[in-house]
Structure formats: structure tokens, C-alpha cells
Image (tube, rainbow, N blue to C red; front, side, top):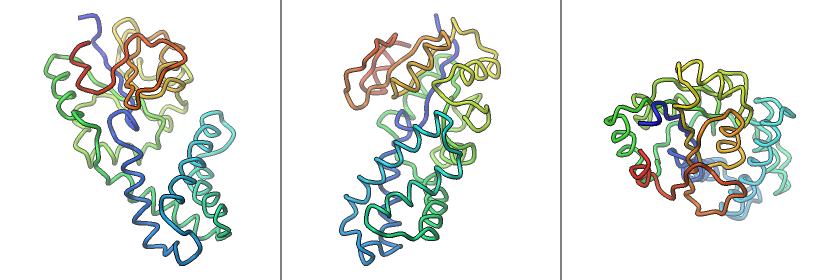
Length: 231
């Protein structure tokens, strides 16, 4: 077989980040009594949070902010949208969110089946994720995914971030993998696919949302089950 090492992204590829985040934030919305404080409904809160989270992650990837700032400011900016200028609440919510989120277990359909299929065929599976080390490892433990993966490379552990080629080169060294025998599987064109291209690695675009990408990956699938057609 052409490929021996398969490098997976985690969030939005295997682990349903939006569903798990929504579930966690909905509980926090209720426990923090945000409706009583002027946030009229959870859907509006979640929509604003998502916008701020995406923007702050982009700033973090580009080196403009540090991890700690990302962790609490996404809550702070969301609360400010509803005229709640309460920094202690924002910091508390940031901590509670990262404590609860990794315990969520919603995976995309066919995740466990496809990982079992791939390991059964002899592929060596690894992970490259931009998430925080403790958070991502906790997600893998709670979902039962950890046993499928050899090396788990995080941005925190590698001191680099996708799409920079350094994190991919670090992952290849850790896995003892040759780029020609490796392939990256992820949901983000800008982060996973372009990053793999930067590192000279083939790619599978896991296109759960059915978007039209600006660049052409080596392969595209619209569900994890379709990986059986490639491997």
C-alpha cells in the first residue's frame, strides 16, 4: 500500500467540536444564570461565542495572543456583546468550559468503525492537533480513541501550530515516518490541507459540511465511511 502512516486531525474531523461545545456551553448558560443577567437566549449566546472563538483561534495560530488569553477572552468578549462586563465571571467560565468540554463524547458517525477498519488493515495512525495538550488527551481518553493512535502531536507539545510545516515535520520525526508514505486527514482547508501541502504530505479533506474548497486536496470525502474507498 502507498501509505503507512495516517495523521488525523481531532476537532471537527473525528470529535464533533460544535456539538460538544454547544452541549457544554448550554449547561454553563443555565448554571451561570445568564438569562437573568441579560442574555435573552442560548442560541444568540452560542452564535456570538462561536464568532469570537474562531477569531481568537486565528490570532493564536498567527502568534498574536497567548494560550491563557484565548482561554478566557472568548468568554469575556461574548459577555460584553450582552453588556456584561464581568471579568471574574469570564475567567471562571473559561476554566469551567475547559474542565467540562474534554469529557464530552460526541463523535462524527462511523468514527470508531473506521479507526478499527484502518488499524485492522495495518495502517499506523497518529494525530496532529492544534488543541491544548491536557484538553486533547482528555478528549481521547473519554471517547475511547486514545488506543487507536500511536503518536499524538499537539501544538502545545510541539511548540508549533498547523498550518506551519514545523509541526508536521515534528510529527513525522516522532512517528518515524517518511513523507511519501504519510497522509494528513482533516476538516480544515487552511489548517490541515494547506499545512500538509506545506510539508509535502498528501491530504484527505474530510468535508463534513460539503463546502467548495479554494484548493484541490489529494482526496476529498464527505463522511468518514468513504475512507474505505481510499484505504
